[in-house]
Image 1 (cartoon, rainbow, N blue to C red):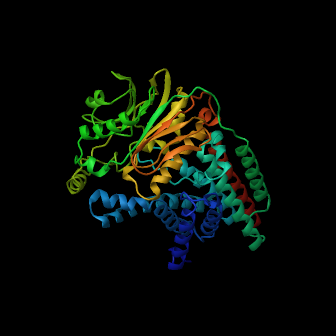
Image 2: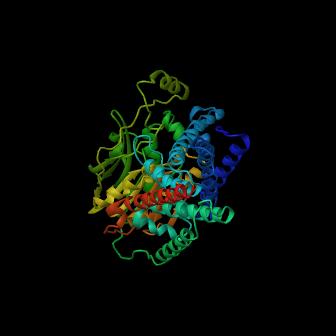
Image 3: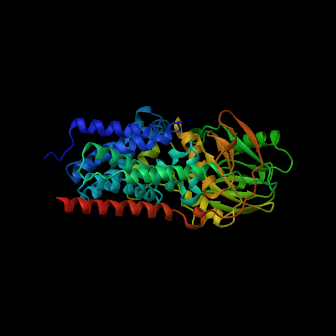
Length: 491
């Protein structure tokens, strides 16, 4: 019995992972991701042993991560000033593939029948996505639920978050894989038509739900000035651009465009030192970085003092958070000398706070925080009426910019709040509570004049979080166990 993957099986697994990733990019056909996922689940489930299931999963997961996150290769090449250094990103791709392989190995050990494995892999995939939201090295970038964004189906996110979308995609893929398996291998325990009919009904209900959601209306708007700047992030990090010069550039842009009563929003780390806050041109919300002690924060400035502040909840792994910094000090020191940038970890926020300014409660969060649904959820629980994402997307390239923006749109749906984005590079935007961009600025330096509505109330997701999605994922695992039990009895 073959226990190690052959070249043809590796190539097939890689191709399936690539096809799945091509539905995870910001493309019109992303909602069809259940089709390649069904092929992936079916192929993994047919492994002869748990080890073979895991081997196939590793290559499919690695290829999926590589295509979805290919922009990281360019980022690393720029960071090190040596384009071939981009190959280091493959360590992350392989790590993501290893996580998928570990889940698949466990499923392969627990379940023997292909049909049971399909449902176990589908439920396990959702649980794995949930785990990616947790812990310091969390990296939840490739989440299946985002593939529903081009359709009204994404509106179910206010019921169970983006993970509920992942449940819909993975369960549909499992039902389709089992239906095809039944047609090809009758009597082999691959399932029946009922799951596919059930998922068709679920899609219909989700579609009706999405189509009947309407945008909030009202007059309680707060005028805001959003900036899009084009500052070289790498030059700034290596101190080629001073903090004073950066503040001056943004202050000039603000003075030339600000209307009376507009609250100004500047991007992440736009104020390189808290002592420079008195130099900002108006009351507003400012991204502030601090080196002694290390801190990445957002602060509300009323024109004379800071009224409230909050820190970044999730520093970026290997960007702001460096695992084993003391244990691997020589290695990190070598990297610092190579890139000319000090690599000191930014501590995460101990508590998240809303910002109070002119009688409005803003839920402000920093850059990478926008891919963590729980950050916006906590801020809305604490009374945030408008969500503010200050971001420095100058580190990203290619489709990473659009991916970050699209994920941020789902935070508006989950919480039913307007989201405004002020960015360096990336996409500056005003987004309504349906996740629809009302206005965007994607290229060049400029401003947006936004009037987001101040909204209150709490969605089901804000109240209960990911529990609906996790319970449905658990139900898939239970269904897998029952299917496997029937299969074993038939032997």
